[in-house]
Every structure is written in structure tokens, then in C-alpha cells.
Image (tube, rainbow, N blue to C red):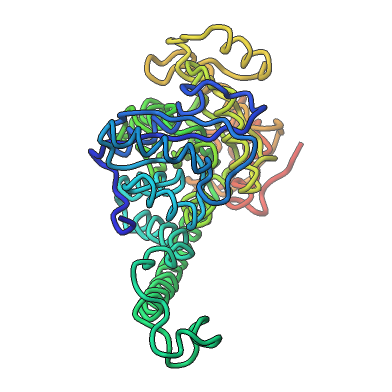
Length: 436
């Protein structure tokens, strides 16, 4: 059962354990995100089962009585897989599978399965495989419980009981082989990913001439649609969780010819598995190294606040929570819960209400970004050779209130630039700049 983790087209029973006192006591609310995740994985939802608990049962998570009740529901609904909205220990998975007589997955395994299905590039596939192996490794001991762990006459002795020399049986040998294979594969994957990381960092470092912006947000908030609308990109868009795993970066031209680089990143969910955050570090470098974050919020969702908290949690884990950020209330053209939308606007008064689909307020967004790029305005004077066309072209593109005065073989230009553009100007003309 444990070697087949795919859930596509399987009949799934969803289970959630909610500690008493938590604000989510309604099953639809508690299992809403898990339902979307399971459907994104291709499962057919046949039942939902929720249990309020005072504490987590160490053996079965929900308690033996409720586990037996769950087994009856699974049999009645002819379920193929049980998916928990909680992370389970290897022992809990083993005991639950004995009781319900079918495969049991937890939340992290489900997300890993979705990521494995969505991965397209070599980098994404390696990252997903690494996350899966690191998550599966401590669970290997429970995958071979049907084999002997001790054999031989010494099995009845104190030494044999703990697997003394020459007494270890088939199960122990197979487990050791599995562990060696998994450890070797993890080492190989980390080496390959490290090489990709270096290339990725060189690629990011090569963008020093551009102001970089990263789209972040809850999965399915509309980041890819926004990227397509703003840049004319043809990024894959689908109404499903984790439609985009691979980072896409496109050039976005703003007012007065100002060009920035806009990157779309993998979406976040609540309780995103730590192994995924770690293994997708290279993909998330776009966010770590961005000059500005655009936090895209699905303003039409009744769970907007919960989704915002999930994104903020992941950004904090990436040490990006202090970066400059603009909040975008996307899908503002299709608000279902106006009370929630107005509450979000109250909490984030500087947020822009936009629609990536209809283009609502995207011109205003471009103005805000242009102001961010310019930063503090400075008046500068540059004297350069008339043959330096690259420098003159740059100044005419990004400068404002530009004046030119020509002399014998040189040209003196005065213009207003943003402080953020001064660094690029110094690279083009390190000796000719005078700040007025």
C-alpha cells in the first residue's frame, strides 16, 4: 500500500482532526483546502470525516473508536484512499492502514504528490524527488513490517531480540538496503540541485541592471494570469492549485520606457511541508533576491485572511517578511463575500484592488511600480563623449525633464532620476556623474 502514493482517479475519504477550541469547527471550513488539494491531485471525493479531539491520539491520531467508525465509512463509500488534513507519524499511518484496510496519506504526502504531477523542468523534478525521499525516509521502517525483523535461534535471546550479529532477518536486511539506496539518491539529488542552484544564482546576479519584482501569494490567487496580462507572456494558467511550479521571468515595460523583470513563483498553502520549502530554495531565490514583492491575494475568497497568513508564514521562513511589498487584491471584479473584502481593505488600506482577468486598475499598478523604481528623485549632470550612445540612450529612456548641451566632442546632460536608477547609471558612467 505504501509504495503507491498517487491518488489520481481514486475514491478519497477526507479526514480532519480539529482540536477543541479552534475556530474552525465546521467540516466544510476545516476540510475546504484539503478538498481543493485532493481534487487538484485528481481524486474523487466520496466522503468527509471530521473529529473534534481534546488531544492527539499517539496511535491513530483520532482515537481507536473513531478509527473503527472511519473504517465503516470507507467500506460503505468504497473508498480507495484516506487522506488526513494533518501530518501523521509512521506509526499512526501503519495502525490506521490496518484498521481502514486501504492506503492512508497525510497532508504533506498529498502536496508532494501534486508537486510530482505538476513538475515539468528538470530542476522542479529533482526538487520534488528530493522532498519526497526526505519525507519518506523516516517512514521506511513501517513499509516492511510484513517481513521478519529477527531470525535464527538467537531470536529468543536478549541479543537476538534486538537484532544481534548474525540474527537479523529478511526485513532488517531489506530495510538497510532501502536506507542505503535512499541515502545515496538523496546525496546525488542534492549534488545535482546544488549545481542548478549555482547556475540559477549566476542568472539572478546577471540581472543586476534591472529592478526585479516577484509575484508571491496563495496558490490559485491569479499570479500567472497577472504575469500574462502585464507582460504578454504565455505562461500556463489553470483554475487549480499549484498549476505553476517553475519560475517564469518576463520583462515588463512601464511608463517612459522603464523596464523591470517580473517573476512568477510557486504558490503557497497553509502548512506547506518544510521539505518542499527547503528543496525549492532555488526556485524561491527569485523571491529572496527581489527588490519588490507583489503579494497577490484572491479577494473573492472567503478565506482571504487565512490565505494571507499562510503566505506571510512562508515569507517569514524565507526571511523575506521585511522586504518592501505591495498587496494586490486580485479578482476584485467577482467579489462573493463583500464583508470579507471590505475587512481586508480595512486591514490593508494601501492595497490595490485589481483584476488580472479584466485589467481593472492595472494602469494604476504600473504607476505605483514606476514610482517604486524611481525611488527618491535626484537631479544629476553627466558629461560624456558624444560617441557614448549607450549612456545617452539610457538617460533619454529613464530620465525626466532632460536637457542637453553639446560642446566640442562632448555632451552635457541634466536630468532627474530615481535613486534606484543611480546604481545602473554609475555602471555606465562611473566618472562622469555629478549629483546636483
